[in-house]
Image (cartoon, rainbow, N blue to C red; front, side, top):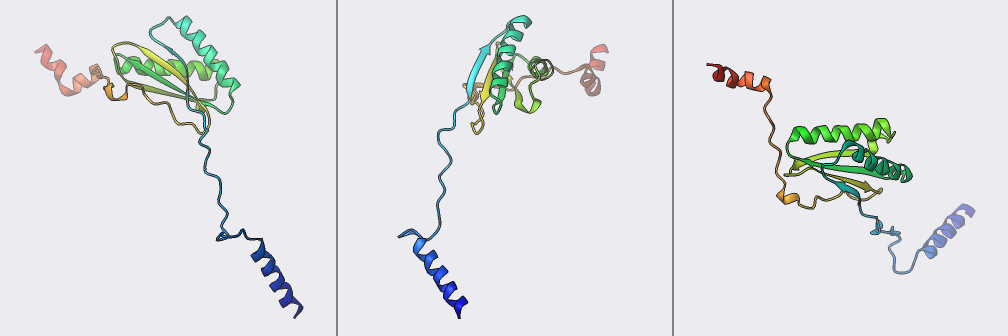
Length: 161
């Protein structure tokens, strides 16, 4: 009998503690709208390797200062081979020479432009990746066919005949 009164008392206390006009479900706060946007740290065109290294050093120092942030590196060039080479060079420099965690360095080779361009972005946690300013105007780079591909298609043999 005593257990029955105790159960009823606990039930009444729970019922009284619920907010008035509520179904008893607590609502959580929506995700913060104040997440900082991605920040363009630097942008440069065709420059010497020494100048590029100085800019990448400043970028690496900022990434080391902002421990939770990642980086987004957008590279534009005249053809895909140039873009890929520049992407590899930048990533290797930041990871191997400056000691940045490879998971924090997200290089992305982009479509062709008539001029070289590199954009260095810092992306805070929760922020979306940077948007491309002229995304609709970009076109894929034309790949230069390699000699082995030409041999397979028979183009080189046709030239010799």
